[in-house]
Image 1: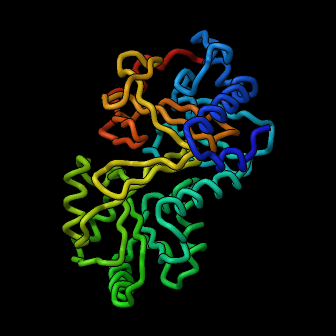
Image 2: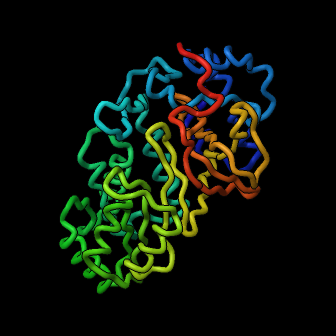
Length: 326
């Protein structure tokens, strides 16, 4: 049985490929939904020689099926946000410990010791509903930071402004992680010149504002907060891992996560780096659900493993992936 120790001890491409193949065989044999999909496209584990050959399950199946590779009891159900009446994704998590290790290890890799920061969460649209994996993560980081000023801010923007000014005057490192519309609200009400604070957007206007292209959003936020770069977090309900960008919208993954792109017209074909395509994600922390997911995002992957997100497919279902109804 593959363990968390195996997943979070990957050091190179060879390690990743070997473990990805092991995870694929395990999920092929134990995940009924994923196995049915593989059978439908006539892909057997004996056909798969490298991680690039592994089939990617359309992310929409997290809306319609219980995607599980284990008989362990469910510890937590993470749900996606959605408008009234919309079907939401559900990620049934049977081992929260894997998620805890994943986001803590990734934070350590990209930002260092969480105890060095005051963590400020400006995530109103997430706080106002149940089942957000992002809230679970940020709440854990807030507690781990053990800083008296760490916490969530809902609509109390004046209090948040005072906290940021106080932390700046103390020379205290801080991470302000927020949903895009709320960060814009804050900069329209107050102006800043932050030297010790990382501003990180998690994307999305959540119906509160007109959607903006990344450059326009980051330009506005950079000016409003007085910072050179806006950081970004890329994660989703269906994943137990996150990628991070420290500026310019270029993301990097932790060692147990990888991004590939598929041909927009042929959902089963992986294309070369440097071309725009559908984003496919390998998240080996998803050992108990599905580690191989075809998302509805469009992006570009690069030879160094970094990637950009440039949009989403126009239609609600991924072209070429809507292959079966179980």
